[in-house]
Length: 144
Image (cartoon, rainbow, N blue to C red; front, side):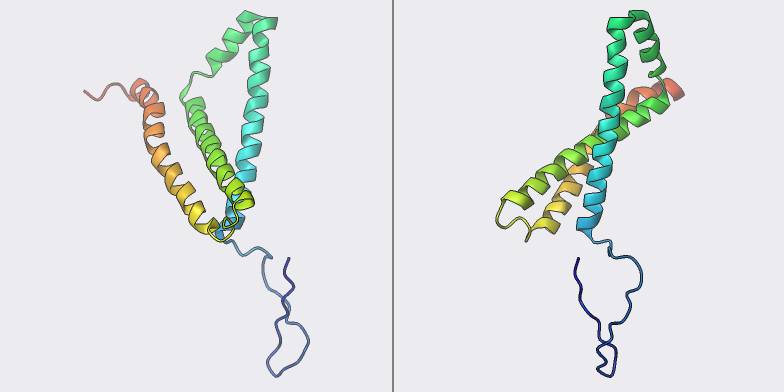
């Protein structure tokens, strides 16, 4: 945390009180927040996935019933969100490693964040299309 002192007009050495948040919302802070959120979401998905997959050994019939509840449009949207979260987390993780281990990483962290975001969008556009194509056709019928 920086402790820069803002001097009042007239040369008084009394620090001017700061207004607002300590964080100014620059790209690095938001990428940090998004990295933590996507990591937690991925963890909870993996936890639920291990639990429902463990049902196979306990009761295959119960497992089939649980899996059947996942076959609806809402869960399909959640799956798209999961893919987006995992993809962002992976791409940003590579960026974080470059910042940590490359001597020029911190100098180029902002440009690398834009590369991550553009790559994420370019990969997610066809991913969303193909993941939602079946659900949209099932809900609204074939276009032809």
